[in-house]
Picture 1: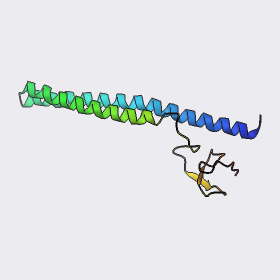
Picture 2: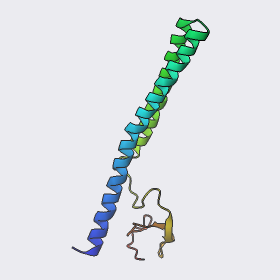
Picture 3: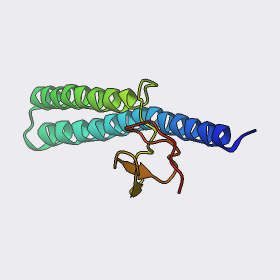
Picture 4: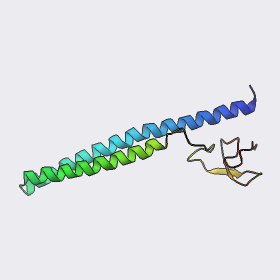
Length: 125
């Protein structure tokens, strides 16, 4: 197998790994936000029920906190899930600092890039 084909497969593997990471993060972030909001709603509802002696108000405030937190959690989860889509056409790796510039067009190249993300020419280090 040619080195260029191995490099392409490695880049494809890295992109697939990044997509998987974002998909898992979408679920984990949503679940973490839901658990946090549920605990917060319990605490706020309990404070109203115990100290203000207003059980109905406590339930109402807890429900409002749950709804707002649920919408926020869904928004965060969907945003993270969009990052896992296969439609990205970039060959750079997210979160990796550029180590040099393309000698053809000057675009930033990242550690695992074998092709320039801008001009699509093969680059070597």
